[in-house]
Image (cartoon, rainbow, N blue to C red):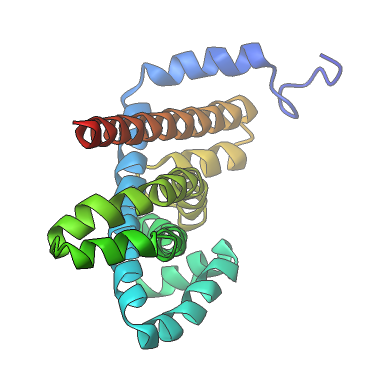
Length: 229
């Protein structure tokens, strides 16, 4: 109200009106769908590779010493640098998937490694004495120990994945993407659109993170119930 210029700072009412208009267009759902697909693909790849790498590096100290500096380097390097480099290597529509993967990978690796390290040695010795076998030891001892660390890493990675993925879309100007719409809004000085698309990113991030927490909570509840039985 003080600024009085929607071009500089759009009012909440103007943003809501614009968002209501956008939701009724096919362009909106196309951008949301492609962005979600890219980010979720990168997230899933990062989770799978991160967990696998954590298991391998925890079992083989040499590989841990080899990969640890590289993964710390990935965490320390600015996202924008990776995005620009990725534009040289791969197609622009694949850049958000690659960047999301790079952001998620070290987070899941570090958390799952910590969960493995924190596994109760006494329980592992007991499993060895009673000859539970690898499968039973994995499901009854390792998984309950790792799951809280995995859940923490996955929820953190979800939020960062959205930030990095959309940033990659903006810089790469990926087709059919929320990031491209943000860039177009900035170029055309459509401030209400800029805020509306930003609100969409925030809302999707919060909803998907809440869904992930719910799924992990249900998984934990089923595991606790099975353990009690």
